[in-house]
Length: 420
Image 1: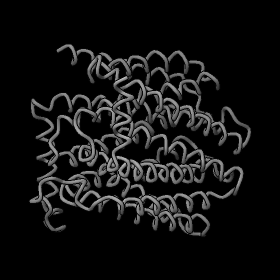
Image 2: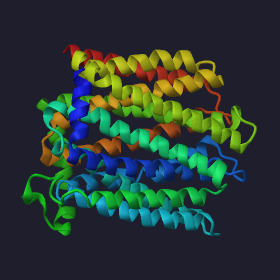
Image 3: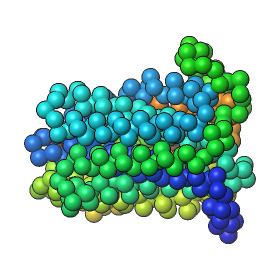
Image 4: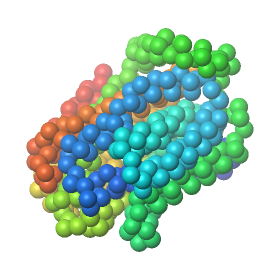
């Protein structure tokens, strides 16, 4: 099979392997850290968590990306991306250690959220840098396979990190702080592995863009506006439409994630440990969906094209999420978690590839940072919607039907665009 041949070639590339190693360690640490935060905020026995409190926490941690994201893009198009991977992971390791200290200290809640915000804000630089650097280690013919393997492997690493965090939390130590310390150690490992990559090998290509920090920050507004105009150009319409569709799919993902959190916490469990185990199973099934998406997307995109593939993914989500989720029963909803991971990741792989092919390297960092901003605003908006519609135990047919309709709308829009 051509896909397997391309995978063998990619894995034999030392440059790609090193970049992939940094991604695996970084996103594995993300999974550990995020589960540590989630169990501290949602599953602590002394906390009576509501959908509104989950939405508030997501807003505190994610909405500031709307400000950080554009700066990340402009700077990624000027800074050596290898240095971003190195110093970004070092900074996250130190701030994650601070978060662990705050968890076991008697301090105001806002200090904890500020620390967590610093870790997740730097995450925008690292993930956008990894995506923008990928075309520097992979040739164009194998870029779609690399986009299937690399981000999906990172997502699976995050899922595995989350599973490891659950294991530490339930078996080794009943301490969220211990989980966060483990995340800090993995961030440090990611920084050390990035030292194996040459400083200038990941771009950006245009040396004139490497200006001083003050000049880069001063030109952020102009650079961002130029990136938006560039993306809005008629030759980049496919990228713009794909990004818009992926934003709606991300909204669906966020709403169903909050729904699953509330169901695991209250409707399906009688205690914190049982709720954590159910959430871990849901995340594992979603990760299995990511893996299947990586296997089927390259051939699907080659046969149908990115637009039709995204439309197919959204249509499958519309039907299967409604059929499996309408009863809000435990087993069908866990199946829906698998479907959610499959269709979301499959559409994301296609969208990543469209953006990388359609956007020049000088603008790629800015576009991927805008991509991240859209992702996070959509996720927080979904959490806010869920907070308004979900009852205390999380059982809401209205949310399930609304998400199914949004999937159907994306499917119809992308199918129409692909035909035109």
